[in-house]
Amino acid sequence: DLLGPVHKIYASDPRFRIILMAKNVGKRKAQIAAIRSSSGDLVLNVDSDTILAVDVVTKLVSKMQDPDVGAAMGQLVASNRN
Image 1 (tube, rainbow, N blue to C red):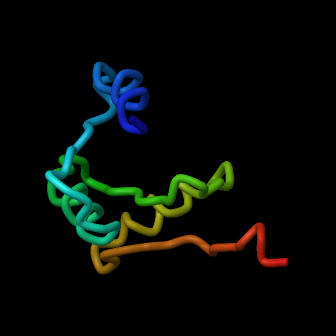
Image 2 (image 1 turned 45 degrees about the vertical axis):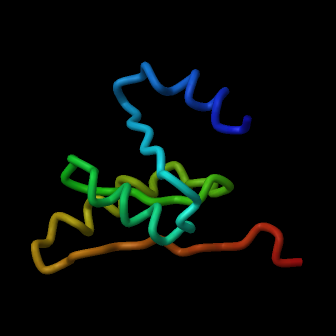
Image 3 (image 1 turned 180 degrees about the horizontal axis):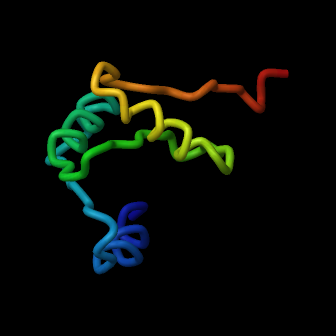
């Protein structure tokens, strides 16, 4: 019931690829499946409730230009920590 409306919106959008797992395998295994099926040079992984700073993607991509860097992450600040 929850997936139907999301699938309807994004299934025909070429920027998105929906991977349907046979059962709930958990977040970690779902992320691994998504990364393994990606075709881009870089993968950006964020939670659904993440709010990105305007320049964060540019900053992360610039770090990845160094062939000795295999991963980069931004500073995480919880908005609900109080």
